[in-house]
Length: 272
Image (cartoon, rainbow, N blue to C red; front, side, top):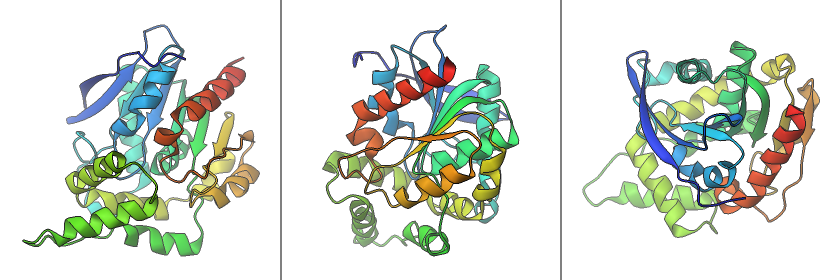
């Protein structure tokens, strides 16, 4: 796989909002939509896009309220995953992406399932990394991990947020944690709002309605790893693959080569 493909950035007007996205690969290739986790942005897919661009035309939008995309005109406390899915569907519709391949990681996996549930046929095939089939304990804890940290003149809130993000993966490269810190500071209340929306999603009852092939996996140290098998059990047409290496939430960056190969193999087989 080539790593030299350029990743370009652009904006698209959708329903009066500006959506920022990254894209790579030439027209005419199979189209692949990448949906990111919180509090990240499409920046998390930079390396992965370069690895996939020789086989797919790849699109990675910033979810509303993250990266450089405008937030949705909905009160933060009332946001639902369906609101994010509707916004992503508008993005897909504007670019003619219906019937594409879809990959979602963590929050992006929640949006991917909602997208195909609410707009069947958007996905020709789907891959989910870290499916959000949450336990009751996780539904309580998850929003607390993104709770507000009031700013103070000494900047102690920045140190506290840094530590939260380091706790996600203490072995992550420091530039990766710094990228996530800046993303979390920039998105503000959208961070916790997206986690709250994930906890309210009826993920378990949406999975059986997904008819397309779905690949489900997670890094073997991912906090959502335990959800892989239960998610598979609810799908009509589910598959899985094992990842090694002790990866947590940043598997798409830290094992971009592996994830790219997994996605290519699955989408190639499902397409044939």
